[in-house]
Structure formats: structure tokens, C-alpha cells
Amino acid sequence: MATNETEAAAPAAADGQTPEQPLWLDEMTPRQIVAELDKYIVGQNAAKKAVAIALRNRWRRQRVSEELREEIVPNNIIMIGPTGVGKTEIARRLARLAGAPFVKVEASKFTEVGYVGRDVESMVRDLVDVAVNMVRTEREDEVQEQAEQRAEERLLDLLIPPVETGPPAQGEDKEPQRVWFAGPTGGQTEPVTEDAATREKRERTREKFRQLLRDGKLEDREVEVEVSHSMPIENMMVPMGGGMDGGGGMDGNFMDMLQEWLPKRTKRRRVSVGEARRILVQDELDKLVNMDEVINEALDRCEEMGIIFLDEIDKIAGERSGSSGPDVSREGVQRDLLPVVEGSTVQTKYGMVRTDHMLFIAAGAFHVSKPSDLIPELQGRFPIRVELTTLTEDDFVRILQEPKNALVTQYRALAEADGADLQFTSEGVREIARTAANLNVKMENIGARRLHTVLTTLLEDVMFDLPDMVDKKITIDPDRVRDRLKDIVEDEDLRKYIL
Image (tube, rainbow, N blue to C red; front, side, top):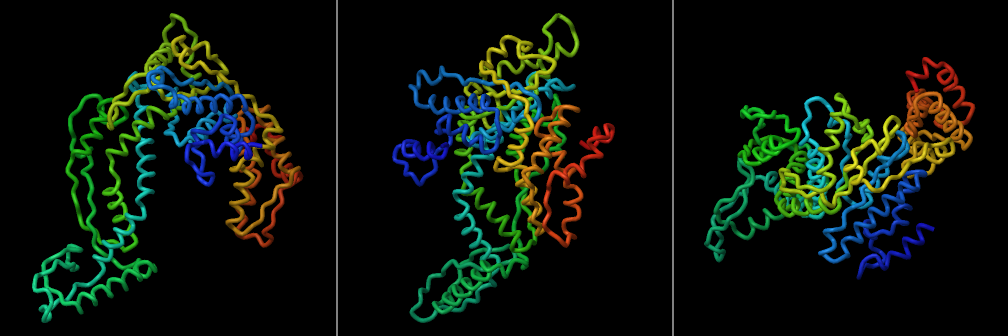
């Protein structure tokens, strides 16, 4: 059903777009977004629906009048549910779907000793760094082929022996020509005279070397390349207040800007052709990619598409009272978070960034506290609240098999690397799910993460002995699951340490 809807919507996705071209993911309908999330996350339909609407609203906002566009703020979301039910995974997959900059931050870290209020802005700086790297990678992919061609020419300049030239032949151009020769400093030019025969010989030699280079027959030959590097700023011992750890604030920005201003030193390194190619390709990419354009696009993406995931927000929610102690620190963090979530301008090393239209997704278990324990101002900035359900045995069965990156699929692929065939029977998968669900009831409920511990323990001996096995076909059935896990599950002390 989802596939048909996607295909039906494709022609109308963008004007002039052919059906063969992929549909822009941020232009997908909420139903299509949920269908994509279903490929990786089992259940939690309410949360998927909420984030799908939030993503679609961004697309809608871009199509309203400019005057009204500034007034439309994102519907920030609070996800409420125990650990291991998919809160982080939903946010991460959503960001990947939309091609949006994404950063995850634990809100509780802002209550640690040594943190001050302005450090909450560090999550915006981290988001900008992610966006710059994302856009730069995209631009580098566009010019990768051109950079490789240029690097190949420079490698040839380093490999070909010096050209022997003689006096010009009768009738040849008497004017000196600038031709390449390989000197101790690499490829250089100097005015020499060259007749037609020599020029033809030089070109033939160059083409032979080019073919050898492409065939990988010169990879171990050594050449000299120039490598530029900056002086470590820590060695300068600049006296500054407020610490030099670069953890945030103006000190960190100043260090980054100072690093850019420092002159870069160059030194010669003798490296293999393979290493030289990597160095030269990166050097050409640096020349071809316009960093000013990259930064401008990255800042725009942050402001319009950025997603910040605030995990463990329940850890900064406490009983609002007049008492002193940890609750005061938590409320202070909430008040520091408020202007960032509400909409402010943050100074980064790339320029000023507005947070007015960033999407904030908060998550927490809220076992002890509840969302209403947050200060009213912060509550008002998270108007959408969704509750994620506790995972059941049936959910575990689906999680083990249905997602694209299912654990069963992962272990099969790992076994195939050793030439083995690892099979899970349907009853075996059900037994694994039942064991994980029972352990979550008897011990701390860690959700789907319990499946990792159960499967790792179950397959520990198999994965260890796999390379030495004669019979490479292994079947995981209920009896094998019970035999391997029986002692651990029944021994309460052992269970606490292993599972």
C-alpha cells in the first residue's frame, strides 16, 4: 500500500520532475514518511505520526507567503516512554530521511559540575558543525571526479623522469616553450626548447605512465609531496580567562578562529603513490569547493531544517518548590534552555544562527517526574506530547525480523563473512523474544536493548568457534535457546551481571 502511494505521489512531487528521479524526502506526505519509518522501527505509531506531521509542516511553511512564514513556528515534541522503545531512533531516522542536520544532546549533562548557563548553546554550535560537514561532503561528491583527474595529472608530474631537450630542429618554433620537468621539488616548469619528436616522445611516455597508474602498478613507488599543517594552538600558551578547552562560549569560538588565522606550514614528505593520491585528491577538493558557499548553505539548513534531540529531559525536571539543592540546578538548566528553544541568535565560529525555526524533539522516561514538573514556559514550547508504549513479546518478534537492519539479519551477515549459514527458526525467534520480555519484567526494563544482550550471550560460543567449524550450517531453534540461556536466566545473581 505504501509503495503504491509513493509511486502515485511521485509525479506531483515537484514540477518538471520525471518519475525516474527520486522524490525529495522532505516533500513526502505524512503517510509516506510513516511508511519509511516503519522499515526501521516497529510500532509506536503515535510518535511516528507526530514527527511525520512536523516534517511535512516544514514543507508547507516554505510555500506560504514570506510575511506569514516567519510567524509559523515548529511544533516541538516531547516523547514520553521508557528506555529502549525507539525514541532516539525515530528522531535519528527522521533527520536522515529529510537530509537535515541532526544532533543528539543529553539534557542532564548541563547539570554537571563546571557547566554554566551559556553552555546550552553548545548544542547549536554542534548542529552547525554537523551541517557544514554534511554540505561539504555533498559538494565534494559533486567534484570528486574532477579532483581525481587533477590529482592524476599532478601524480604524473611527480613520476615522469626529466625531459631531455635539444636545440630546435630547422623550421621549428625558435621561441622557448614552458614544459614540465621533474626536479627535486616535484613538478616545475622552466623555459626550454623542444622539437616535435621530443614532444611526441614525452607525451607517449606520459600516457604509458598514466595507464600504469590506473592499473595500480605504481602504488608502491615513492614520491615527494608537500603537506601543509597548522601549528597546534595549545603550544602557543595564550593566556585567556574562562578556560581553553573549547567546550563552548566565546573562548571556544576564538580558538577556532585563531586556528584559521595562523599561517600554515608546509613540509615535504616521502610517501607511496597511493598515499600521495589521497593527499592530492583532498588538496584538489579543497581548491574546488567554495567554503563560503558551503557555510552559507549550512547555516541556512540549520535555521530551516535543523533537528536537535534533547534526551533525558526528565532528569532536569524536579518538584518546583522553594527548596535549595539539585532541583534548583535543574530549574536553572531549564531556564537556560528556554531562550534557545523559544528562539534566539547564537554566535558560532561560522556566524550568527537563529534557532526560531529549528525543530526540538525532547524525550524522557518520566518515571519519577512528569512533564508538568517542567517550568511552564518550557512546557509551552513543547506543545506536542506523545507517549510511546512498552514493547511486548510480539513486538520483540517483529523487531528481530522485520526492520531492514534487524538483529537476525545482522548476525546472518556476520556469519556469512566466515562462510557459514546461520538460520533462525520462527520458533527460535519467538523463544528469544519471550526470554527478553521475561528478563525485562524480572529486571530493569531496558526495552529492545535487551535483545542485544540476549542474542550476544546466545551466540557467544557460535561466533567464537565459527572460523574453526567443519559444519558451517547452524540452526537456532527453541531447544538451543533454552539450553544456552537456562542457567543464566534461572540464576538471579548471574543474570544481573550477564543479561
